[in-house]
Structure formats: C-alpha cells, structure tokens
Length: 171
Image (cartoon, rainbow, N blue to C red; front, side, top):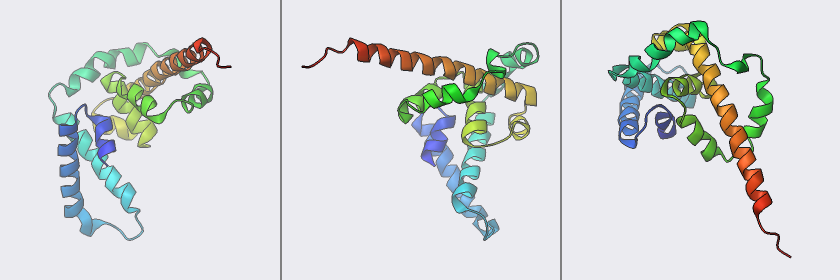
C-alpha cells in the first residue's frame, strides 16, 4: 500500500502520513467490511481515497487543474485516434521501475488522472467527482499522459537499440 501512496505524492514522509491515516480508517471501518469483499481491494480503495483527500487539502492542488481546464475544451492530444496497443506493447519491454519513474515524471494533473484511471481502474465520472473537475478535463489529462508516455517509451526503446548497436562485439 505504500507504493500506492507513493504514486500520488512526491516524498516518502507524505506517503507514510497517508498510509498511517489510511490504516487508521481501515481499522475504524473494519466492522463495515462485507464478507464477500476482497480485503486487498477494499484497503486499496481506502488508501487511494485518503491520498486524494490529502491532495485536495494541498492549497496548490487546484492550480494544477485550473491551467488545463480551458485546454481540455479546445485542444486534445493527437493520440485520440491512435491505437494504444502498439506503444503499450513497447512499454512492457521497459523495466517496470523505469516505466513507473516515467509515469511519476508526468505533469502532476496528468499523472494523477493516469494513476486513477489506468492503475486504480477508476472511471472518468468518478475521477471528475473526486477531483472537482469536469469529465472532459479528466479525459484530456489521460490522453495527455498517454501521449507523453508514448514519446518517452519510443525514446527509451530507441536509446536502448542505439546503445546495443554501439557495444563492441566480443569475439
């Protein structure tokens, strides 16, 4: 669950704060856990919601969305019609740690929406509600994140190919 927290904040201290607060909520809400609910998924959802609460408490949180709110209605990254599967297959060739590092380097708002939608499987309607943004803004940030990641994946793959070709041959 600590890794989940780290996807939403930049430093370990904040992540530990979120994790501690999350487990306090888990223990307080344990009596509400239904017998047919998967415990890990239930805890993960509490951790994600606690991380979102933490982000919303940050005074600069709204600033990362205000700048892009206008863009979402007028501009859209080019990959709306692209087939995601091709670059995603390439992304799977990259070591997982490197790929998650690149996700964390995304612009804050796009990183947040990407994590919520792709990794935590939360739909745009719920993301919009949780973050206080429009669904179109959520979609824009997801598309923006994918476009940036697609370029980063291409660059990483191309650099690895170039590095492999430059290695001296051993006989």
